[in-house]
Structure formats: C-alpha cells, structure tokens
Image (cartoon, rainbow, N blue to C red; front, side, top):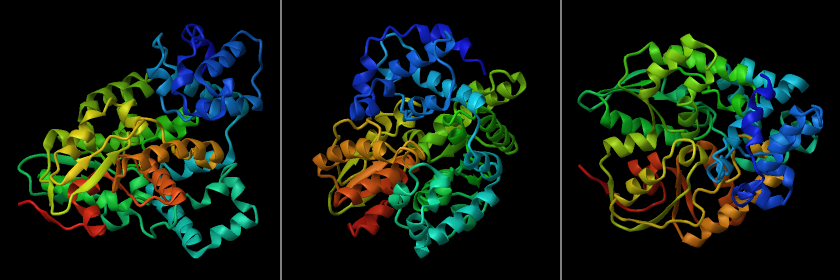
Length: 428
C-alpha cells in the first residue's frame, strides 16, 4: 500500500479542530498527536518527505481507539478513521510486524481449533493463578506492552469454548421458514458464552433452522493493526463458509464482527472476483440487534421493574448506524424502565485489545464512561459487543457499582433477570 495514494484525502483536513471535541484520547491527554488532525498532519508530512517512517510513528498512529467519532464530527466529511488504518498498514510495511501478531493473525485466528486450544491454555493460567505469577515475573510483556497491567480485565475464563458445547452444524428451530446462519465471534466463542447461549435460544425460536457456522475470526483484529493481508485471508475463508450453505440470513451477536463483515466488499477492492462474491452475500448479514428489531421476540414479563441503560458500541452506532433499534427493543419489554445515559455513544476504551498496549489511556476513557453509567442508577448495563462487555464489567468492578453488565440477547431472553434474582415469567 502506498500512503501517497491518500494524499488528496489527507490534504482536505483544514485543521478546524472539531475532531478534538469528539476524540476520547485527546480529551484524556490534550496531546495534539493523539487527535485525528494531528495524525493526518503527520501522514501528510511523511508524504511530503518532511518526516521519515520510523518506530517513533507507532505511538501516534496506534494510540487511536478506532472509534470513528472523529469522522462523524468532521465538517469536511473526511474519512479520518479509515485513513489512520491505512497509515497503520503502511507503517507495518515499512517497519515490520511484531512476532505476537504473526502468531495470532497467521497461526491462531484462521484456525478455530487452534484458537480453542490456546484459549484453554489461557483459561488454565488465569483460573489457576499462574498468570499472576507470570505477571510478577514480567513474563506477560511479550503479549503486549501493558498486558501485565491488563491481566485483571477478566476475573475468570471459561474452560471450554462456546462451540465446544454447541458444535458447528445445523440445529432445528420452532420457526416457520427462516434458515439462519449463526456467525460466532471470537469474543462470544472464548469469553462471553452466556450471551451466545441466549442468542442461540432466540434464533431457534425464530428460525426453522439455525446453523452454527465453523467460521474463523472476522478479520477485524488484524485490520485494526494495519495487517490488511491477514484480514483479507480471514475474510476470504469466511466467504467460502457463508456461500457453502443455503441461508436466508446470517446473524452475529457481536456488533464489531457485524460491522466488519459488512465491509468485506471494501476489503477486496483490488480482487474483482472476491469483491463480487462479498457483494452478493452482503445482504444476508445482520447484527443481532437488527435481527431482533426486524423479527421481534416474546419478551419476558417482569413482576418487579428493573432500570436499564444502554451503551452504544462504536461498531454499532458509527460502524452500522444502529442506535434507535436497541432502545426500541428494550423499551418494548414490560417491566423495564429505560434510562438514557449521558454520552451513551462515547467509546468505553475497550477497542478490542487496546488495554493490552495502552492500559492507562484505556482506563481514563473507561472512568469517564463509568461516571455516566453510575448517574443513571440502572440495574442493568446492556450492550451488543463482547469487547465492550469485558471493558464495562471491569469498570463496574473497578468503581464498585451494583449493576449487571449483559448482552442484549441475555436481557431479551430473560436469562440475566433470572440470574439476578428478579422474579419474571416468560410470555407464551
């Protein structure tokens, strides 16, 4: 990739500063290099040969959350978030990939069985306390600059993946005709398995059949690190899986996965054949929130009211334009009092594995989010992204809040209300 191809787009930035008001990182640091116009100025300087590529470029390019708030606040409509990702891609070509990324993107994410084995090993280390020993010895730094700090993001890890319990394959549903493909994202598969189980129940209630796909990672992790080639390989594998079955719709309960899968045609801009394939399959893809909004679901009846608030994942609200749908779903459930939190669409600081490399910045962004969460007095904090769930759950523990973080599938299906001891009866 040649960053010079993006010169005209980068040069459109008139340095107005509107991106400053929306950027969580700039609002935390006040550092001009950590805001969109600063990053674009840096890339322009590189193109104009005023600055050379070096490892010093890594921090300003990679401390961006990729939340896209700068793009939505840009008066000129410059696709700042996309330009920064392209800048990362060129950086990797110039400086080189890190060994941990080669391992993850080339040898684990493309192969679900390998990823499951690695996850079981990680679960053993976490649950046995060995990870804390490794942290004390400084052995975790190989996994990320701040991985040792981020070790407590999750309290425990499941010992078996979601698809280790519910195997890939076709399952009967009680619906009339809809044939559903269920894309299981890595977050649900490895960590947020309760969300996956409730999603599966809902899909089986609505669909005539539900096929749990043997998909690999959607490709978003390597894409956000600038590894476009690895992302394209993962996307290509998934396209083959999508086209191998006869589905009326393909649903995922990870808004990050949904957002990226919908971008598959853009990923294959230089491969006409694969781009045509991606475009043909594109109408099938649905975020679980979209799917619930379109098809509905028998809502649980609550004998005791609960207060619910909602956090907008960046890949839902800006990546897909999904904002009103989750609120309409939650407001439609009897016994729920929905309270809008301030800055509901402000990034939580999760951004995939951001905390593993920028833990302190991630926590600054999270602290702002948790103050807004606390102001609602909610019993449930609902979202639709596994990475956000991990970050928000950590925030709840960190700030000592009495609130349950859950996926919208869990609340819609009623499981979280039962786990919280709230009396309820499912409708017929």
